[in-house]
Length: 450
Image (cartoon, rainbow, N blue to C red; front, side, top):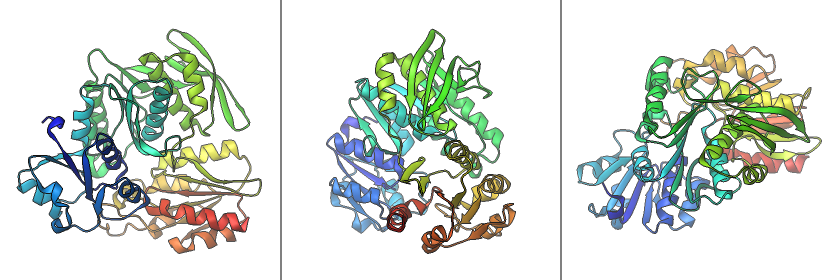
């Protein structure tokens, strides 16, 4: 289909982070945009304030008539929408163009120079760094982000349409709709086993994605992954490697060894080796794209991060409060490493909301191990998202596996009181569910207390 023939775009699941980026894109292009979502959030409020018509009940009678003209309307949905959704089935049976988000992203990017970021961890941060680097270097780029950039207060960077930067999402094999010019794979840890069944099927999917890179393109892979490509790593023998690494005033200073020599004097302000690795691959892709080294160094210094990715909300001598989207055991371990590096020998309290019954079941031992690293652990109930409960899989069950004497199952309304009871000077809230909606309330209460 030709997107030029579309006048209006209707989103089913418009409040999702990837869906809302597409909604912003079509709105900026001058199309009429609206949609449905199950839950009203800060993000849907932002879209409504831009002029989008959004409702929160699955009812075709609530759809604005402008979106019921089948010849001019594109309907986009997320795979998280259940198959019995009334609006989705109406549009499918009434002759509308109905496409998954990933398919539309493939159409938008197919006539651009596309840089795609894949991996089970690190996609959002890497994509936002890469989009920021190219934007500051005045590349005519559109970047679709899986999080809200602190630099742009948006999940869309729009500075032109010749070049695109996208997250290549492995969920539902969505990334196989892309044909990138430059692509990277940051990690291939087991995840989404409700989709893939086992880790080996997941790896096959990444292998298929690697083959989607154009013949004239380049693939970058984290050193150690079982794929061929340009390697990158920290203080190792990779093609692109961070060298001369040091920490000053909470920031990383380093040089980068490339296949064509050493680039000196980079500074990066986000803590954690995982974030440093993300910065390195973003730099490598920007270098291969052709961005000037001096501009890249200035751009990296100005990068401020992504909301809910090691986001500082309180940072005083007495109390540090950090919120992060970490929802996989490897991501939790990465957060622990970053906190330990920045705040050695300080007690840390973590409040974690498990995301999905299937993920909790598949990685229960790994979750228990990673959460047990912290000094104090508070668990919320499992956030179900698209899933129905699984017998025996509860937060209480997960809590029983954590080898830590200072652990407790709590409700959301108890978060603040639990934090105040603790003498831990470092407080973390982690998870991909609705725990992010609690952050402002926690911040305000703790700020008054401190």
